[in-house]
Length: 231
Length: 216
Image 1 (cartoon, one colour):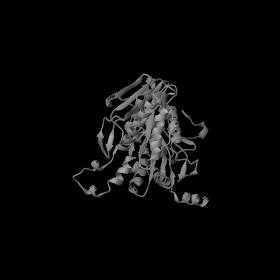
Image 2: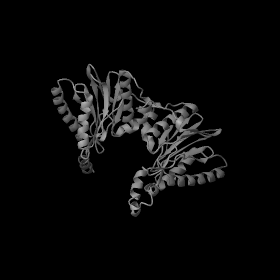
Image 3: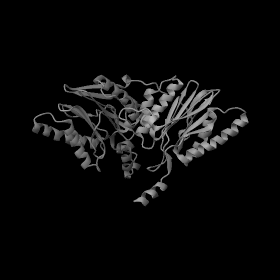
Image 4: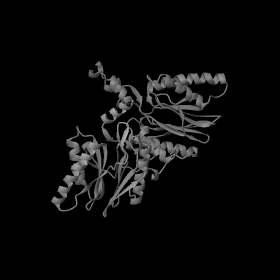
């Protein structure tokens, strides 16, 4: 998706300039594969770790899982600048709201704050966010806020350019009522498959499990990723 | 409003949006496809069989522009008939794939169709060839069409070497079903063709008989 935006920008006076390489003129994009799964007692979220400017990998160990509160994370595919800006704004708003309430905020609140911003500035932004976390009222929840500013709660959600390739795998392998370990395994497999096929996704698989007790982070390095029998 | 939509129907090119797949097993191949043909947002044919016969034991799966794909298949069908008379025996799958590749490559700029060629011959058993953009490559399995993007993860995970004929058929049906549920340009019924030494067996699986997965 970012590739389309960059193509427009590189048609300017500088494209003939050999002193500045092409990738330095392209917009920074977290090409990406992200996903989030609910289980009884929390959520598991995962993302790859590649950030690209055009064909150059600007960061191969990016952390795309952004905490916006103690028990609420968001995954940010799309334009790095746009999603960072929105996430920072929501983090501030949520922190303020939580102080006013004098208790941890609800995941639904966080998701709605994202939605309000993404909807209001939907023409200018290129950001599709997945918000996932745990709260006392409804336990583990995953909310998807795609580009355009819709909000919907789903037990499992994938996003980013690599997500197209794993819809089939997700549909066939997701079962309701999985345990935390099963969810982590499911996420690792799905991210691996997407990273194999999507040029904009790669690196390591970063996972986080959010429960009442807090956040447990895991990294699965490239050579430890599951192998599938392939051509 | 009514006139607006009729105009745009006729102006959009007819495409077989599509999901197609072909898998080798020991002793033959299984080909599968959906059945939706769309022109813009309209479905102009919901029961089209995209598995086209090139010879008794060689089929091809069509995707991309419906006209381009059908024309290539017809041309190769004719060329293969002539070729098999000349050599006096059944043609090789590789020959059929090469004929498709030659057309795809020569008219690369004008055509926009991708055919997967699969079949059985005495010399090589079951074989699957891809001819995307004019290349020729043999693969144990191949997926194509707009719906294929959504099932790359699934086929990578589920494909095992050395599957039996029934396993392959189930694998193909599952893949097509998953792709149809995610891709707007794929849908309808699923067509299956199983080719082995004895010949080709065609099958049609109706929409309500397809396997369902979570949230369907």
